[in-house]
Every structure is written in structure tokens, then in C-alpha cells.
Amino acid sequence: MPKKIRTLWMICCVVVVLGFIFLSAKSTMEVRRVEIAENKKKKEEERKKRIKKEVDKKIELLKKTKSIAEISALGKYDEAIQLAREVIDEDPNNSEAYTWLGISLVKQGKKEEAIPNFRKAMELDETNSKTLVYWGLTQSMLNNDEDAVIKFQAALKLNPENSNALGYLGASFNKLGRYDSAIEKLEEAININKFNQSAYGYLVEAYFNKNEFEKAWQVVNRAKKEDITLPESYISKLSAKMQEPQFGMH
Image (cartoon, rainbow, N blue to C red; front, side, top):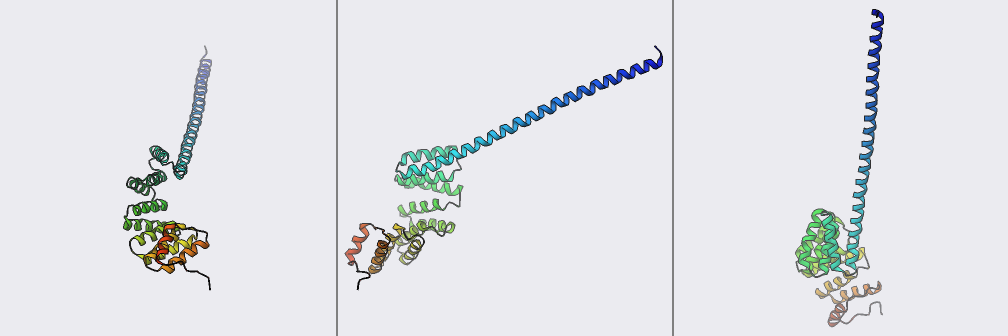
């Protein structure tokens, strides 16, 4: 075979081999590209499923937490306590569940057992004024009124317009013999919410304890104007000291 032809043939062979290698590499790269795209798509789908699962779980936990409050309000305290503990098992950082567990325990008469749950709720969420109010109320029920005052004041720092916190703070001041402070806070509570029934009662009691019976009757009269009925025990005790004045009569 002539040298030129042999050289040309060798060049052709090299070109063919190189072409084959190129096409083979290109095909491999395409397959790899498809694999990468499919893996990326698969991971994205898995990520979306994972996020959806987490969102669904959070929604379900929120529904359960809301149900604790509803069940407790119906007086089904055993059921509320059980559900709260189930929610806490699923979500140990659920401050609201701890709060409602504490509230349900208090309503069931287990005040001492409730306190660690209020404490845990506040550790998880320091902005939950509702927890502080119920914690303070529980301490007051246990006659730990100095500590109750601290809890109510902390709640009011978070929410100064909390009529219930003001009312309960006034009640604790009243139990501690700090009648002027009690009257001040109870008047604030009523100014914020003129239908705060318990605040009227505590205010009557504060004036009664100061032996200012006419002012106590004035509070009773104010309550009547708002169609608020106070417990008969307050009225009976007040009537024993002073007959009800005829306000507005000349």
C-alpha cells in the first residue's frame, strides 16, 4: 500500500476512533445530566412532602391545643389533661399545652401539681401573659399572695390593658391588707372593662374591709347599672353593716 494512502487510512481510523470516543462521552454525559436532573427533581419532591408533613403536623397540633381549651371549658378536665399530655409528648416545646394542662389541673383541684406546668410554659414562652395570670391566680388560691402579686405584675408588664390581671392583682392586695392599692387596681380593671364582674365584687370587699360601707354600696349600685349581679354573700355581709342607701333619691 502506498505510503500516502496508508497515512490517510491511519488518519481516518484515528478520526473514527476519536469520533466514537466523543459520541460515547457525549452520550454518557447526557445520561449523567438526566440522572442529575431526575435526582434533583426527586429530592425536591421529597423536600416538599417533608415540609407538607411538618405543616400538617403543626396544624394538627394547633387543633389539638385549641381542643384542650374547649374541652376544659366544658368541665371535662380529665379528658383535657390527657389531651394536653398527648400534645406535649408530640411537641415538648408547646407552651400553650403546658398552660392549659396547668389550668385544667387547677380546675380539677390539683393546684400544687399545676404550678410546674405554668413554670415550664413560661420557660418556653416568656411573652405569655395568660400563663402568668393563671399562675398568679393559682398562687392566690394557695394563699401565696405575695407571689401572686409578682405574677400579676409581670403579666401587666406584658399586657397593661389586661383587666383580669388588674382585678386579680387588686384581690391579692385586698387579701394582704393593702386596701388602697387594691381599690386603685380594681378601679383600673373596671375602667378597662366595665363588665368585669369579679372586679366589682373585689372592690366591694376592699371598701368593706376599710369600713367604708357607703362607698361599697356605691360600687354595688354601679354594678347594677351595668346589669351585673354580685354574689349574695357580698350583699348580705354589707347589709349587716349598713342598710342600702337610696342613691339618686331626693
